[in-house]
Image (cartoon, rainbow, N blue to C red; front, side, top):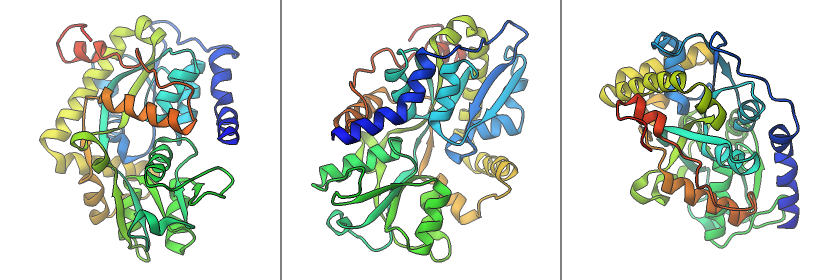
Length: 338
């Protein structure tokens, strides 16, 4: 565990440095753009459609908008803490890490997507059959990595960084996970959608869902994507943040009311950014496990923090103050109450 913690410190060192040692970029005055970050992932569905169709930019009060794409949560959080980003869609793992490692200035201001993560295996049909096998996750210490390690621990299987545990966990990008799975290089992976469905349905894929993560949470609810900003931005640019959240609320309600057309809009935006729209069966399978949600499920966040602490990723699981839904309440017409 000591080696595990040491490497974790190294992984997060850049983030901490940005929080305390680097000169922060100013978000500028009223004429400066509001800088929004998101990933070209379908788990950032509202961001894909909001950017692709101009929903965010068209919302009164947002003003000039600058959109930035990221491929990993830590990079987006570094930009947010460093002051070159104002607000971002991100996974819960990087949000919790950043809050605890960079001065507790980060705020989760809304939920976006719940669900959509699973462990897919080629041959193993039980936890015991994973012993001696190689399983991948998208990144050391990310949301799925923590979920896998904690689940394996609960099954009595050890993991560590040097690969000498009962199960070897290998950090790979989602696209590399798919390639290695199809080639037989790994037994499986704990991944977000659409990668789980792609592993199952792509030619030469197959296998089974060994664990659907929703089965591990009360009522099957766990946040996959949330919206975050910093305390400073929330104080200095609150009207613009509220306006952006109004657009987010509209996109979320649109998904809830007409999931078929919204899913098609997500795939169109996804295809435009990646040049590879998802095939209908994969799209349908992936979205069957995703749920739009303005609620970031604070109870699940606290539980996730406890899991990360137990595994040695973070020094404490106290995330009191992380969630601030007052701007979301304003955007929904309910005033500024938390």
